[in-house]
Image (tube, rainbow, N blue to C red; front, side):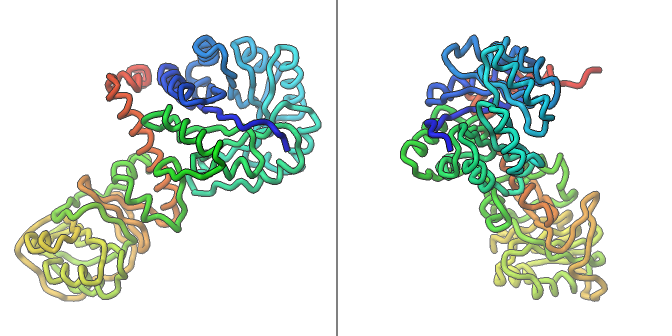
Length: 432
């Protein structure tokens, strides 16, 4: 294990250089040691991104995250000549490519970090590459893996036992877990979203620095990932808009809107299929539902009402989280007085008859959205979204990522920008 003093490296994974420079300046004021031209930035702006960072921060170590897989000599040469002190080569690359990259780096006064990700994360591969004498090795937890909530330093611990060169760790680091990464053997702490999505990058770096120097975890409200065990916490933070964005602009249950809004709600679905006006199965579903669940009723989007105050009262007593009705509801004033979340596509005073012709806990479909028993339902003032149960942790984490990025954009707007200018909207419009 290397005795190198812990280094904070900021991964500038932007697609616009001006936003990257703004965050880099804030980060340096906060005490960041190294600055990384992230792969998205290099792909978007080319090696001018590295040149700009070198010119702006002449005394800082600049990393070019080229993710080299082929043409190692050429890519290291152009990165080094652009001002990179360290160039990233993937452990998935061939042995020849990695060796050529290391040799080229020696020729051009740069250093090489070999990045281990996905299938390359084996001890056998680490041992082999260590024999090539790179300057650093990096353990990279991919973003798509982070979104499942699976952030582990187990492989880092294994690597730290067999290499003597400094080890970098990237993927989901924040002020809560950065000390764990150091204890696991990391010397280079590559911080991404915990800084680049922060409203105040300078403050974010200072908090992480304080955690490192005190060797004490500091609680973070954002920039962490969740598992199925703490879904309620993350779903309470994100909006239905965040969730829909995380599902590639899908998941919204059409035609239903809040008729009794009592704050954001979420819970697993008890599904009901019934006929317009047949309120037997919706009422019976109250008996089946558990505390915290949501009753979702498909009544074909038509009147008469299949839900009213008495059903609401029963659901409220059982602490059911809410009701979503593709159909009609009545007794709105009473339901609002009960402060019970109720969403429906129609309001009417007329009720139907309890004929019992429907089904409970069967797949239903409202517009383009298929809802299965156990899927997660989230509602707020914008409407309701359905999250497939098998992907709920991933989607919740992606929604947090959306929220965090929006927080940063909001901060930049407050500093005098506009959404169009900050995001370079015209630049990224599809050519006509």
